[in-house]
Length: 350
Image 1 (tube, helix red, strand yellow):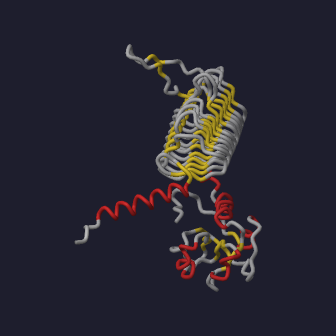
Image 2: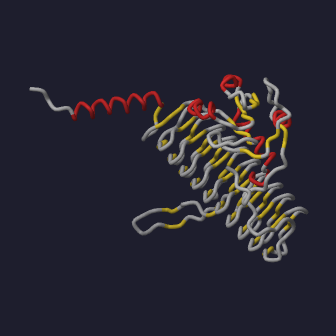
Image 3: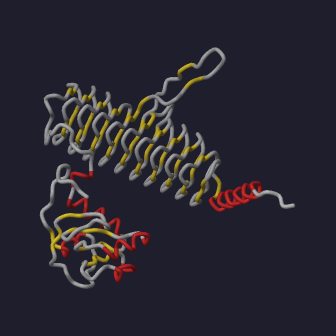
């Protein structure tokens, strides 16, 4: 349930307008009905829009009293007669598009100090930094020497932008984020507490002690990347750490030095990627997984949650387990071990 304390209410909108936004169909009419808020399927009230995209919640769909529901053609007939179905190919994606129109402020980290535009007098900006028109800098933010920031970008409270950092246009840098030794493209979102461009973990280890090796590479973040709160991205050791365009990274992820992540990858929370690993385009990694250094995960591969990748993964494969292996092998292994464990617990018969 949206809270008007945190998100401004939107002007009522007709179901026909909502359908037009997502190229939806209204098979039973009802387009003139009005939506004034959104809600969850199970708790919705009259006047609200909901969506249905998982058969697990069919009982909730049958009982909902919402005014309209985004639904696929497959399940449109299961929508109650009192609810207007908006038939779309992908209900959840359509839901995202509509929410983006109704609550645009929720698309980027929320403002911290109320600065609506311009540069807060409480910000500290080096005279040699270059900011295009339309940059917003909130109170407490620090922008270092020779940094460059493109128009439409917002630097939130207490964020630190290091010397010579380049940030493109229409970006959002969350509160308390720290960015150094980094080149950032356009429309990039860094959520609060993200740290980018700090030292990688580089030491020449030996009996005489562990010698720190200077990390002299950069971080390259391409267009339309989003990085979740408190994630860390180390700069390269002697080449660049790269995050490809459109990649989405969850909270509390660790990305080591020299890692190369391709385009449109998805990395879920608490994943750790060791130095010099490569993820090709469209890789997806489930939460709390680890990736060993210097391995390659091929294009389109998927790694199950809580797995450890210790060797290369071929393109398009689905791996899981510790160490990670093809999921069919992993499932067979788990099933076999379970049977052995059950057999060992049975008492021998006389």
